[in-house]
Each structure stands twice: as structure tokens, then as C-alpha cells.
Image (tube, rainbow, N blue to C red):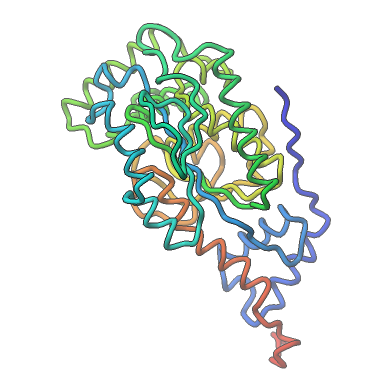
Length: 344
């Protein structure tokens, strides 16, 4: 598959900077918001960008390795948390409502039959991946189907008028999958990118490190993103990577959450590096591998709140900052319009 992601044309960069610099403030006084406003203006190729129909997508999937003990929680928590999302009771529901963002849950491969439900997108690739301790998590055909379905989801959102999308996930065991993908695509030592996930104690961490080392002994460390994704990824990670690529093709603003979401971005970035121009990095996760991912991508997140919940919560929480960047660009007076003397 090839992706037609076009880097934003820099021809309006100077005009955007001039518009930012002539607002009634000292040069650079709005700090990171100024860079964010410039980025969104470039993405939309507009001096007056706008955010339309903001959408949170939470991708859910089960992992075969979860039953081997890579997580502190049983695998059934995946489908139980999806039910919580659908009932409106999870943190991402609370934050999405507060921020005025629509929320949809994508069943990429949960080992549970939800039936037809409001707010649920049935895109199931299967009832969870294979156990990567014994075999690749998925075959190439299933991986490619996940990428394609995610891409189609992003295109559908764009056709409905959405131009900003936040990414979240749910899947017991997916911090382990994210660690393996990060190890493969950054080259950083495996132990450095393994964290406590849902709250493993010290004994659990010893077990998790041993299991992931066992996985690498079987599957190796493929540096090719598609090979790494098939070897160790989750259906939710594959579909999320495809949705990111599709959203960037549609010139949408991508709100990137924490460790697992960024592992999907590592795959997408290795396929199409141009995607970074469209990414807003929400926060620095408390999961230790996230620092490695951000450094590899050369990314600086907007906030650090020691979050490690997932679900897209960090992406939702920073949406008001994205709004603020667009609003000051469009609504703040210039020195000339306000009749305020500029710097001499």
C-alpha cells in the first residue's frame, strides 16, 4: 500500500508568522501556542484555520499474549471496558463530553460479541491476535486489512466534515505489544522500553521482561514497520496506524495520545514520514518507553501530567489548547486594529 500524504506547502508560513507576530502581545509571548497555531494554519493552508467536528476514536483489541501474564489485569477487562465506554462511564467519555468531542469505539478485534450498538464501529479482524510468544501476532493479510480499514475510517470522517481527530486505545496487554514495536523500530534496548503498564508490581515486571525477551528470541527484531506490526502488534494498533495515515492523507489534525498510540504512530511514520507534519503530541506519558518514542520522532508534547491511562485521555485533555491556538489566531486583535502602539 502507498499513501499520498503531502507535506504542507510552506508558502503561507511567512504570512502566518506575520499574523501571529502582530497580535497585541510581545513577540513569542504565547509560547508553544504560537507554534501550534502556525502548524494548524499550515496543515489547512489558511490564515484563518478552523476546527470542525472534532472526533475521538478509541480502538479496542485483544492480545493472545495477555493470557500468558504480560498484564496485571485479565483479558476480559478489554470487553468490559468497551462496555464501560459504550455506557458513557470511562474517563475518555467524561473528558470527551467536557471538550465537546464526539466519541466512537472501534472494535478492531475484541474477543467478545457486542452486537450492533450506538457508538460502536464493528471492524473486527478476529477475536484477538495470536500469542506472539508462539507465533506472529497476525499474518500479513490480516495486518493489511487492519491498515486498510483504519484508513477507510479516517476517510469517512473527513467526508463527514471532520478535520481533527484524537486517537485512543483499549486492549489488555497492549503496552507489551507497544514495547516490542518500539524496540523494533527505534533500536533501543528492550528493557528500556518496558514499563508497568496497568500497574505491575516488581514481580510482575520481572515476568513481563522475561516474556518479552522470549518473544524477541522467537520473532527477532524486524526493523521493517510492516514486519514488526505483524510479529508483535495488536489489531487495534494496526487499525489505528492505518487511520493515522488516512487522516494525514485527508489533511486532518492528528491528536496523538500516549505510549500505545505512539507505537502505532511509529509504524505509520516508518511507512510515511510526512505524517509528522499533521501530528500534535498531547502529553508525555508516565510509561517509560514513551520518552524513547518521542525522542525518536523528535516530538515535544504539549503537557506532562504523569498520565498512563490510555483511552485517548491525554489527547482529549489538550484539545482546549488546540482550540486556544486557533482562536487567538482568528480573534485576537492586532496592534493596528486595536490602536495599540507596537514595539519601537
